[in-house]
Length: 388
Image 1 (cartoon, rainbow, N blue to C red):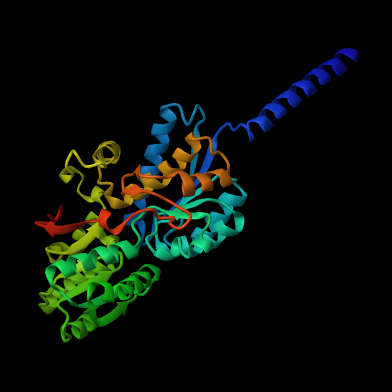
Image 2 (tube, rainbow, N blue to C red; image 1 turned 45 degrees about the horizontal axis):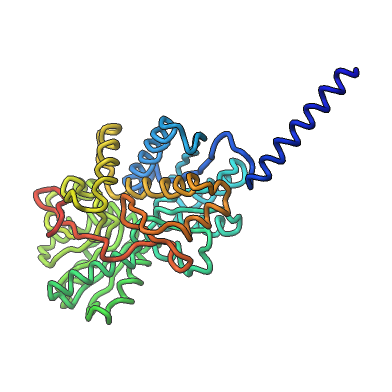
């Protein structure tokens, strides 16, 4: 009995020493860093979500094969929101409350991301979204725990207007999806008209699942519009391209960054020829000059992604890359709890070279990108090319 008591006392002293050591270092030592990721692996958003999903799996393996983060492995709990806000909310709650993750990445679409935002705020969990809508990270006082890596629709809208101004096209029509992404794009386009001397002469919408938009296009065709701006994600924009060709409309088609993938070209066929969009650089990695500050990051990611999946990562893969790597940078710095990760993202990410762009977050800006970091892409001979 005396030996047993002595052993218990030694164990208690040892535990006390460990507890004290952990307390002195500012937190509990972890066997693994658990991060949640919600992307649209299936459903309408899957052409966007699958590259994000794949990028996350690829990086998790690379990081752990290289020894983890300061010796600690990461565990990415990847879940599919099936392209619905309801499923995204369900999974968000599970990851936070049951899995106890340090941060949540995603989701793919603006609607799902907006539905997750309130949960992140209520539970004080850092969230890094792959959605484009500016409302995901604004107003900033209601977005303390939420960040995002895609260019905002505000950036994309401004880049479109920069092009239209240069081309001397002042009268435009808008045809946008009625969902959260489309509505946010229209809001940004309307807000910037006076700054760029643009007049919106027709403003139409469609439902995400609509199979034909000829009625809206006929109205637009009878207006004085010199260009059409289409704001949505596939398949709607591809249907619009086909409908325009069937109606013989020859005004320029300018899409959003939501169609920056091969899927749009596949769906639209030869009707895609000549379509312009604002985009990040990963859409055409081999066309980036070697002196570009993003060249090394993009080339390395592109090569490893295509080797693993025999497919293009597209810009959406870059969002998956940046979402995870920004949190990894926080963990590397010693920010290993939810609050310190959030604080690192807001205050320490300065001129960070990502696959999407150069990020500088601040208490006033949880996106950290600028409109002039986007480039223009054009479809020529069935391929996206950098417009010089």
